[in-house]
Image (cartoon, rainbow, N blue to C red; front, side, top):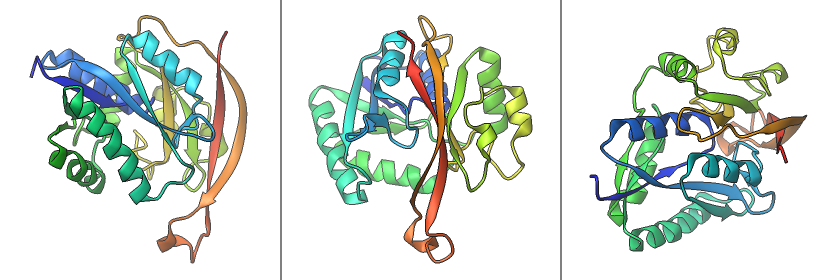
Length: 237
């Protein structure tokens, strides 16, 4: 695999950072590109609410090129798939053959990714797949990977978790019903330092705001909206 070009689907959070470590430390492959989707309207990372400037600062600190895909607000699965396939076709022409993801145990998401990428000739790799999420988070903390919570699903966690640094006390404070890595979407993070960073990304915390979004149609009868807390981060000048 050494001569093949690989890209990592980069969320800007801890799981993507852990996947990057797993790949780079394995010495079997090298990540040549980070690929991230953002909201075209807000210029923020989808679901994380992270400003594009911080995303770009991450890539510079890692020394890895970044490609940003701009998505419309609340795209349908069809619209998302169309945009992604267009970008994947470009990457294929540029010689990329391997795609890495930081997913851990969501079978339906893995199947969706494989069904999109395999027909286009990409090998799809999940370096964190089926790992114990509590141990994974402890490993992340112990290796010096640093992250802050930027988004919290208000249905499962309260406002106090938003804006917290991910450390052992954070892990111990999580309710037993919440996955330690937030794999079910309970929370999202911004990774601002790790052994692979040339320097930490300097930021300052802004306001914590509450936003609502339409719930999935299957759940709207009992709950028409989902609420999320967001901690706004700004790049230090």
